[in-house]
Image (cartoon, rainbow, N blue to C red):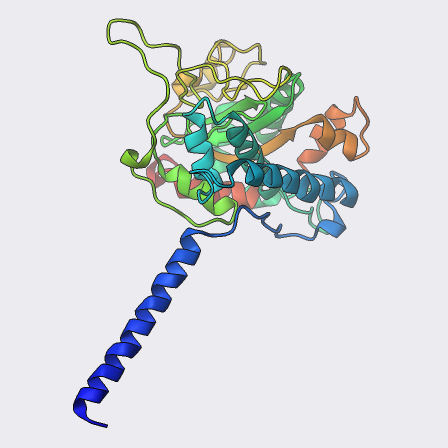
Amino acid sequence: MSSIGLRLAASTSRAARHAAVRAQACRVQSRELHRRKELSYPIEEGLGTFLPPPALKMIAEDYQQGLLDRLNDQVRGTALENKSIVQTVVEGARDPNKVLEFNYASEALNNSFFLESIKPPPANATSHQHALRGTALERRISYNWGSLAHFQSSFNAAALGMFSSGWLWLVTDQDSRLAIVPTFGTGTLLVRSGKPSDAFLEWQRLVGEPVVPYSEGELPPSSSSHSPSSPPPPTSPVSGLSHGAPPLDPHTPARTLSSGPLPVPPRTYGTKSRDNVGDEPNLQNLGQVLHPLLCLSVHEHAWVGAGYGVWGKEEYLKRFWTVVDWEKASTLFNKVTPKAMQ
């Protein structure tokens, strides 16, 4: 073959390779709609005495898949079709016309974090508490609440005080401050500041979707506006919304955590000093970026489906601590807080 023929063949080969790469990139860009992430532990074995196999299957498969199916139906053919769940939550929180998209995506994300916060109890112990001993997270819990037992008591009290469905979180901020934070209905911790943060990446990894770095310019503008001469409308400390998003239905709270005082037990929110016990809980003491460390589902279907009965919430809370993955919570704490603050 002549040298010209060899050059033409090489050029054709390179063009074919580049076309294949572009086609693969297009397939990634127009990826399949949201799919349920498999758990790291077998559903058929359940979670000890906390959730028997049928209850775990209901929460991890039936409920989660139902949320994702409805989300997929909602976003198909729209600008959100190729967005990750995290992107859908972030963008839906800023648009009052995307209430259904936000609700399904946020609920699926919260449910994923709950399932990632727990794992089957060890065979030779009653809980995973041994993984917390000697860690920076244990020291911070002791600093805030006095002991792990007092923290668990405060956490349980906060969950019992939530009359409607929602989620209860142990969170930290960039200064290693801890807090117990409830979100109601489909409320989210993800967009407290309304700005991109490294927390977004962790949430994307959580649901097993592509990790897409955000820049602030990529976020859509909020649909709400106000004149410079008028005071800005109230803003939720959790979602950053400056408008009252309509709820999914009359019985579902809107997608924000109320910015008003909450009637919660003392120490529900971590404080800088144990001398502050009894002070009015105030989310504004926390930083703008909240990193969740563990999550509890406060939904009636969770304890009723597990056989605790309608009034079995308190027993459900007691057994929750047998399956909390303290190793993962501690790893997350070390990852997102400065070493000097640990």
